[in-house]
Length: 454
Picture (cartoon, rainbow, N blue to C red):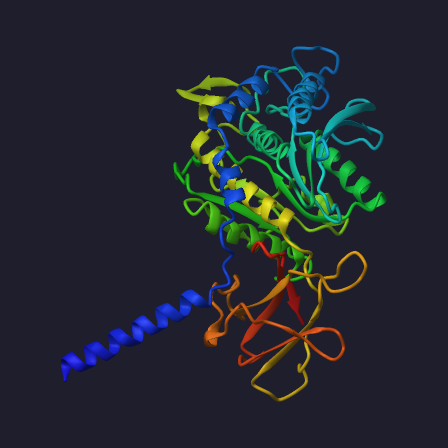
């Protein structure tokens, strides 16, 4: 009897395991994306940061005409790097566009001692569709203890040389890759003075009606040591997402998406979802994009070293202070760059999110849940071809979508057209026990951001 019971239990386990493998909603890996991530070069990343640190300071109010140091030299350096890759790009696709952008600061007071015009940089990697823009941000400027000191040595290797290195590698790698959607890399200034450069870009995006789909701000992604506690976490990175519209805001969906793509393409780097807009008493360049109504998150190292951040470079009581390159964990930074690329490339190859997802039987006493949504359209308004749909669910107490749909429901047959031209799907799970969302999936297996069904 014991042998029979053991055999039965083994058969049940095998059946459950094999069913689960067929019902996963996790994306499959795309060889093109795998190749792109493999091309992230640690030596290039080190070179970028060394060359940025050599500019002495990148303070927003520092020199703009000195060719060897200051914010002007920094923007020139970034532009020259990006222009070289743009010029070398293949001629069979649109060339990347490298543009200096200028804005005025100091008119309304704040952390400025004068009114002046400040430079920053925008690099556009055009897609063939260009109906959606995916934005990557990092800030150029640096500071020391005195935020108004624009001449002291302020290396900024991690804050935010690490973010700049992420954007530079993105431009280098994507300049010669075909993209369906446009990727814009925004190298912003004025962050340490009050997020003014990103505010300028966010307002510009709103005024010019950029089709912004997602914004990833990378600020300090290269340090793995926590001062004080001496915690060392080199396989975790935080993604901060705001909660203005509740736990299922678009920004929260983007944060979950980044975590999911990382689990597929960078499995040795854990994305930790932090359901705050940012750290206590601080903010980042994603903020004004959120103010303008865009979907935006901040990517940030898990540990912070306050012996580096905003410090004068010095030795004091046997402790070295200052944001120097030798304190950057470069293998850790490379993994965080790959996390960004995995999310950006999947978004660039995915369809738009479905619209008007809702629970059609919300008022019915029914243990089934009927979901309807508008199909993703082609430019002429007809339903998009070669697009499938996935219904996601999670229990109400959980933060992340389940990787496997309960009840053995296949993700390959989710949603059929109904009489009203909508997509419709009935699942045997109670709307009282689960949250639901819908996402579109390209023929190549790239999922869109989810749309919550209400």
